[in-house]
Amino acid sequence: MPLSMARVGDENSVKRVGGKPETRQFLENLGFVPGSLVTLITQISGNVIVSIRDSRVAISREMASKIQV
Image (tube, rainbow, N blue to C red; front, side, top):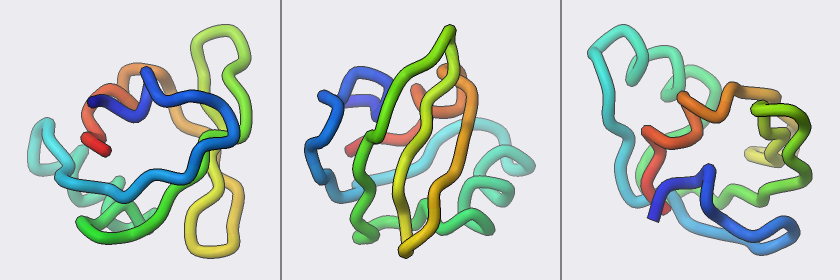
């Protein structure tokens, strides 16, 4: 399921990251690599805030939809 559809507060494991090579590289630099744990903190007007690698990161819903958990 895409990260954008995950429930707030649930911890999920990243299965794969899709999209264009530039998008995949950007998300991998933020820590979205297969096997990493990610928790959806909140969804605010189209954007999502997630916790990954002891950091909080805000990404667009479009980018979150490219991350499969």
